[in-house]
Length: 589
Image (cartoon, rainbow, N blue to C red; front, top):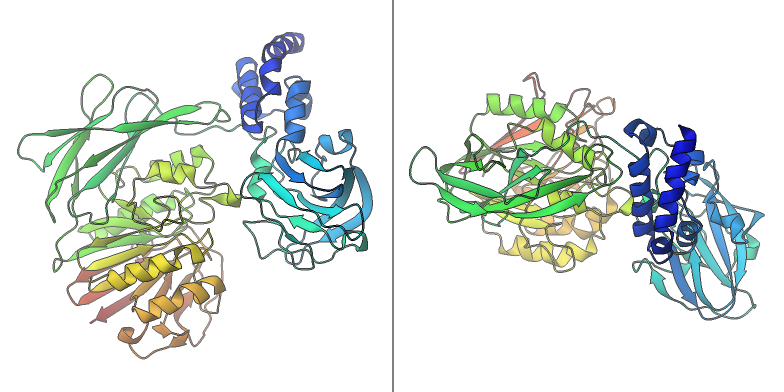
């Protein structure tokens, strides 16, 4: 059997060798993954080891993987230092093969328990190419420093790949991960004084993740529409609604809709995109569809169906459009669902106790690993029966764009308002008005300053009676936690009186007193109330007291918060999936 595998692998290697030499790292990785999938069984892919992988990697592949992962130009001869985290069992293959020498130097991290060994090599002026972090998923990716060979010279680093590359002076405290800037170097070896540091992203460790990288989804797609969900694609969800679903076929997608139970059906054609992940062994390619229903009446009930492959229609699903100002409505807040089953149980209990629930908002970390499509499959599975009738208005959490790799699957999963700042990819930050309430949904995993002007403009223009901000990292828990939010956004919440700021991330429950300038106020009219919830069992932290905290408790049970707005009155109830009430709040304007 092994001889047969090796023969097939060799034949495939020969066929792909020429193309691999001119490929990018991504194309090369995809090519290798394709060869593996053509020969190995699902079980063999899921248990792949280095020895087997070696049979499928050509010398041309190695050339690409050793030189095109990280590139930049230098204008003078330099020494390049590669700092490799010592917990990585196997050093990247190209370090010794390309003439890098391991030194006696070491660098430590200021915050996490990370230690880095230092490899060095001299290069002439010109293009420098470095390789992948390895074939496993060792999360601490190596980082790089560059120093002129000649004392007194300065080096200019240009034309980097990836294009987002930054260059800074190396000193104690210099950050080395774009997605974890709190980490810095704790020491600079004497030889490296005067170097420039090139920070990277931890997620780049996944770019050639073969060993342990093949995965299986528990909920593969079929030719029947599933993962049917709604999202508020417009800033005014009273007259439009987006419908999303997936299939494993490329047939035309259509939705028909009408006022619930009456009138002729209207049909809307959908747009589709393929999502491909060759590392999912049982469902590598799926089609996601989006159809937008327009010209709807505010505060009205509609029903819709999705067309199946054979031209039939799914069973009708009902939803309610946002009401006109002055009409009551209810919504549910979840946070940190991490594609766990508790989210479905919470929504089931919330809608049972509050049957007039209109929509769901999730303040980040919807899934555990945002680049793993199988996590999104699980997220939608747990929301089946709810997300198709209750629109989902999410915020981005750090796990949704884990390790700095972006939020492509998050954006593919929802069709959200494109009214965010010009400085960001559309739909990463947005706002909408629902009845008497304005909802601001910024993105906390990018530099906050890119949204500050937009946030001020949004809050300045908002005329709704109630103002909410929904985002992942809490500024207070109740001690200062996310100081960047405190510095950039909290002054605007104070200036324009945001009533409630809804967050998560810390995996325990907090409700503050009304705060202004970080200090407790006597009445909700005088400050913003910060609510932090968690919809999976949280970290066991005992209740504590603090001048800012009205309530703080460990979340041994998963919680959600249900808000009802009726004119000048707002009520909030925090419940678990058994219906036990953990917190209540009422505000009257």
